[in-house]
Length: 270
Image (cartoon, rainbow, N blue to C red; front, side, top):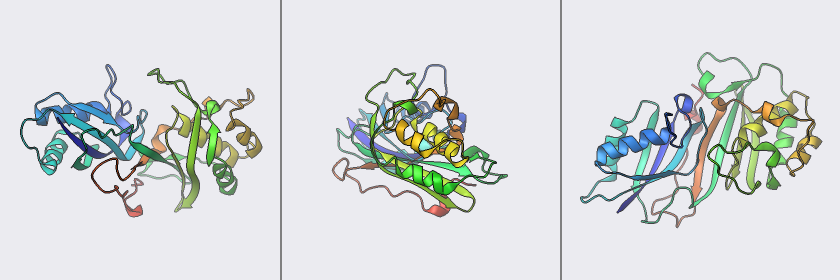
């Protein structure tokens, strides 16, 4: 049995998320099909994060396992799989990994980025949420900083349709909000995320920026105190602006160096 670590990027616009589903086109399904076509074998495939429908990735990590009988060079596998994959899914790197490497379980943290446009763009519709009204970015940034630490995000989750339920407690390692060339970028890093959590947090931050929601109320919500006055579900930001930006592993999790994300000039703001 051979194990490989895959690093992928994809435009999620045409897919029903990463995770395979019955009667739905998914990124994982396309990657599995490509791997099994190239190797001629059934494979085990697992991603580090289950991105939702329409969500993109600059660095999704997956492990691929197959009972190959002959030597398969990682570069050859990368080239052949990319030839089989659709235009909006690309494998950036394939390396041999430790036999027990697990893309999801071995991940230390995931970083998501959400892009909010402050002006109309002729090219970026698939990768942004254009908010037409003026936003108080300083207040949004103040609220974002409150996310750092251990919080109960029960008010910001939607029940997972896959039936995966667990603790609503999440430890957020970092959360920032920056402005760059007409783009507001919200980044959040944590060990894991609840279903729809990031998009609902972004929706709440936009409400704060519009002056329709108080920071004090936001602080209470992230402490696990839902309030019926606020329809957080209705605030859910569109999937178009969300990217899985980076997955971080301990140095011992696989036998390759840490992957470095693309430089700022290569961001998806085409």
